[in-house]
Image (cartoon, rainbow, N blue to C red):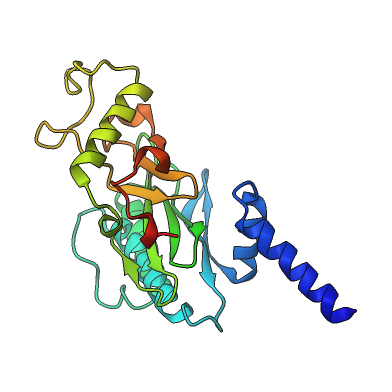
Length: 267
């Protein structure tokens, strides 16, 4: 009875995690196979100042064969993000700042102290917040979302999102372009969806309407994610429009991408 009860439960879990309408169950199943790496360094007080780093990123459990590869990848991303904000002068990271999160934060903190010594009346504090979690997993890939927020004074914070794809068997990063068989057709689909979202006619000049184009040509966003429903396209603030416009995002379902996307490599 216990054995048959176990396999009945297993069948239910398998069914709910594979059924398209069970997104919530699928996320729960993913979380059971991983953990969130939480880092909280420093303290940010908008009145008295200070420096703060908060990290909350999902990783596979340490016993998972993917752990080493994905952990190393994310650890480097976290350190790189801190170093990107550590020196406002744009100088290369100082020796040792690329070794650990703590060493990168220490330099970030020291630079804040130097800044405050030069500009004691400068209000506020410096803060960085990094978040990472899975968007979708399949037997073949892990689609990952990494969010970055930083405020180092100024008119507004700097925030952007990145997407990464990991091989579900090896944990190695894969290029999103490897899953696209016709980039020209995809670009046309994305521009059509973009214009529809922004209520723009096919003949409207995008630059004339205030959008930012590279070499006067429409382009795919730097980041897009493969989901269960289709491809989620995400333009970060400043990527194609002014900061005030915020991010621009939309999904094109796989039913409209036949012959354009290599679904057999995703699912």
